[in-house]
Image 1: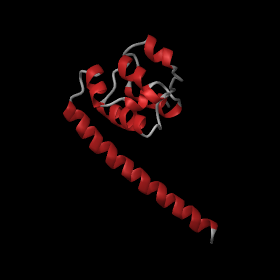
Image 2: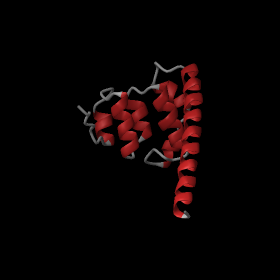
Image 3: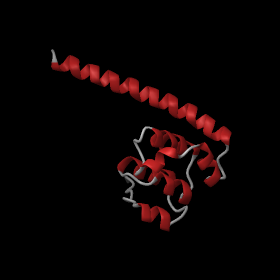
Length: 120
């Protein structure tokens, strides 16, 4: 059976601290624009979520609901997520960077295939 995810608001994330699991948080980060500051402060996140969505997502503004979300950094993660070490973040950054590079290559290939299809 396919899991049904909730459409969470910032209030849900704030008023239900440490309630939501990684899959639910990723769904929320991909489908809406939650405050990264609220997620970092009120939910337990993994180093992967911190790197992919909170820090990198904040920097390139794919995620986050305001300018302040772009200022989140490793210090903010470690300050609120005591289970994450700097080494965890470094490993997650390396993994996410490689993952992002693969996604870029895949998108470029899909774009090239679309152009070839249109002109043939």
